[in-house]
Image (tube, rainbow, N blue to C red; front, side):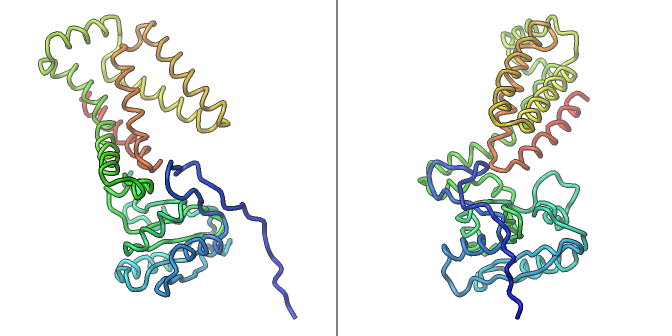
Length: 304
């Protein structure tokens, strides 16, 4: 008689730092596929909840599960997802993010084409809306598909707020995404090609601020954007306490020193700081990276 005794240690169900909220449930998915499915079933006690298990990865034999509501899901979307999974030929998967990239319809697009969440309540909400959820063993995140562009700005916390507050916050995130793309490019375009668009007093203040700056507006903006990216990457790679210190102190010291050394104008420091803050309004870190990539394209286009 053979007895299955394999039981690897898994992290317990705790809260999440990536999708934290002031109201609503605090639990999150873990690295155990069975635990994650049980969290969904605990909230969605319905016979229509179905899960199909598959094994992917020619070397790792990673187990995944496609979860959906049988009576609600769009059958065409479900068939498309299952077909994509069946066509995958990859040696191994350490995280579901690798699977997400292999399933993308448009790999060159900077925007995420699948929603990633670690909150069971968010996953259940999308399942009730007819979406398909993909869970992977040894991965905490769950993929939701299909999604729309606007849904990338919807936070799970919006479900537990009054509709007026949720609408305001969603509008703020949505408008912030476009503002972070055009704020510094507009600064370049106006100063370089269209100074007549500004009121005389504003233009006078800008010219006075840039009087001693030896660089053109486009080089000035690219320099500060690069500094912000370096500070952000340094803060992410280091321990939390040290990373926060580097982000705050480094930003203040570098910004102040750059203005005093006449490398950049003080007005640009304000615009770059606001643009950086707006890029983090979206709940998706991938959308934040997408806005940065698009902003660089607009910066070069504005300089041209």
